[in-house]
Amino acid sequence: MDLREKPGKVQTFLELMLRFRLIALVVMVIATVSFVATGWQEIVSLPLGSSEALGMWLAETDTAKGLWESARYIGVATIACVVMFVVFGGVRAGIASVVSAMLSFAALYVLGGAESMPLPMFGILALVAVVMFIFVKLSVACALFPFVLSWLFLSGILEIISSKFDAAASLMWGAHSAFAFACAMAFAVVAGKHLSEGAPQAGALVKSAKQLLAPVVIGSLLLVAAMTFDMGERNWVYAALQFVAVLVWFFVFFFSISSFGPWERLRSGSRRVEMKDKKKKAPAKKKK
Image (tube, rainbow, N blue to C red; front, side):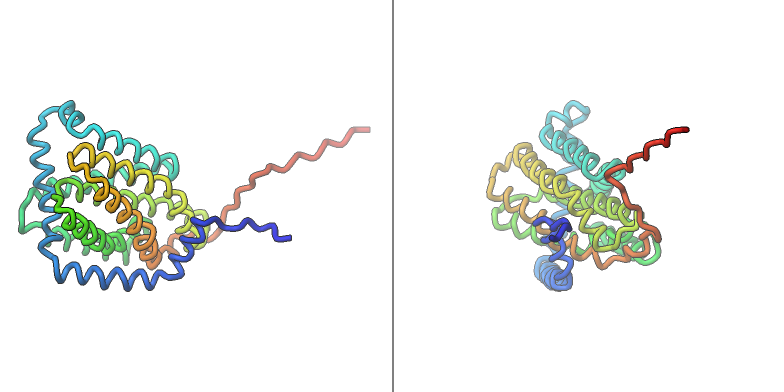
């Protein structure tokens, strides 16, 4: 009788993604090159439109109460996402998600709608990601460069979806990018934790993705629903396609491509084994 625990459907799917990761990489590279070659201006317009919309939104709302009233659904969805990252991924994953989202919106604010800024900012981000990928021994460094590559792919997909529905990018692309960055960094932190406990690379990545299944799926659903209500574009087909695009990006492309990172250098030499059942103490011998 086989007493080993059989892997669930989610684990089996993730293991298949690792097995076919080279195919995912080739598909993503070809698609990204195609997006950049044929629609670079459209892709650049996404951060420009988002930064302009963010600046206008902040200018129109002077108080914290005004900000909350103008985006209460997004605020609730954001809080729920952070809570889920903490519950399922741990405190460090929650902190990583918050910091990542704040950095994303800070970058949009600095961009300020300047047409000359997107390319230099992306170049700096790519350079930092490559340097960290090669030299920095941190889990976020292993995931940052794969995120940058797959983020261009996600931007191209979102641009195609928005163009099919004649929808303005507005803050929706910025919100999706911030959420994607938060998911990627939380994933890196959780994977780093498993590696520090001695888990093998593939096992650590699969465990991390499984832990973040609920935050990514439910968080993406809440975010899309919140933006649909707050931004007035109540096209549920458009929202559903965005939701599917983010999930496919994370579990099929980012997860697969991140496995090419140098995660093994983070692995601890000794593996910790948690015992579920404590050993019962032997009864004390009676004294004669």
